[in-house]
Amino acid sequence: MKINQLLHFSAYGLKTIMKQENHPILGTIILTDKCNLKCKHCAVSNITEEMYPYSNVISEMEKLYKMGVRILFFSGGEIFMWKDSGKTINDLIKRAKNMGFLIVNIVTNGTYPIYAPEADLIMISLDGDKRQHDLIRGECFDKIMDNIHSSHHNNLLLYMALNKYNHRDIQNVCDYAENISSIRGVSFNFHTPHPGTEYLSLSKSEKKECCDAIAKLKKQGKPVFNLTSAFPYICGDSGKKPCRQCVVVEKGQMHYCGRCINIDGLCKDCGYFFAAEYTLLFRGNLKVILDMLITYPKYIRWAK
Image 1 (cartoon, helix red, strand yellow):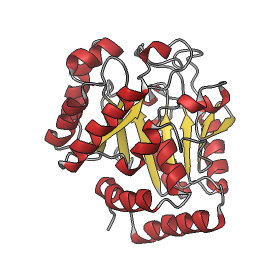
Image 2: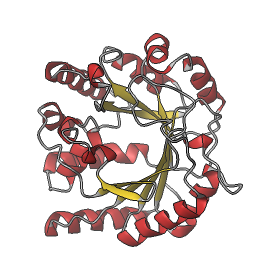
Image 3: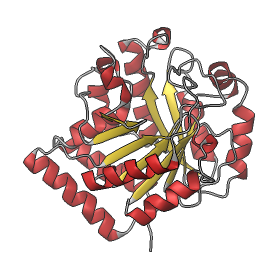
Image 4: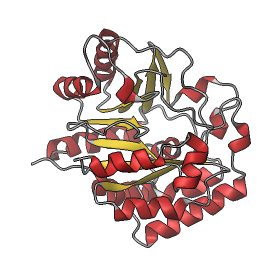
């Protein structure tokens, strides 16, 4: 990130807080629902197995840019499986950069070779140690670790969804993030109970235990990306309102905050920490703003 980019985000934040505006700054494009895994907690993969056409993706990128989005995520399904018209995820990242997006990130399950040299952050799903991860996602832990160690990138971030199976494994994932040099940190979420996956949901007391454990580890210096100042709101189910500063596009349909907003009753059980963090941030919560200013710079690649 360059200084002028930091100034852009700062100006956006101040304007949003002062004028209570809802213009989006972060956008996610779902490239495909096709995935090579069948994870227990996932209810959105391999429904159509379609690849969103390259021309459509470019059109969506242009729309998002005109709306003011400057942080762009590509997600799936498994994004390294996406291809169309001879293009791959790396072509989309380059196009997004040329278009003017300031930060371009991708989310992957890590089972494909991790090669995305122009991505600012590569988020890799890891749901615990080998036993817990493979229980949830199938036998792929070793392959993911091999791909992480083989990657030439130093901008990897682990991404863990906490559920009934793995919520005791927070320490192990933090240790992976701390001890593997290419990994910058770890970001936690709670399981979002899409229909058919409700049995994996954590109770309110279990969520509080998780937040307390994460906060303790972050205080000890573990590389945790989450804003612990938002944990009281996350655990108490307050502050998790639809975040108008974030949008998700899937097959031409745009959803504010996330896809679960259109499923009756699911929004209140949303497990995405960013939904609470961003909502509080752009409402001017001083503790969350200070936490963000301390935490985020540790995970941003600064450009000369």
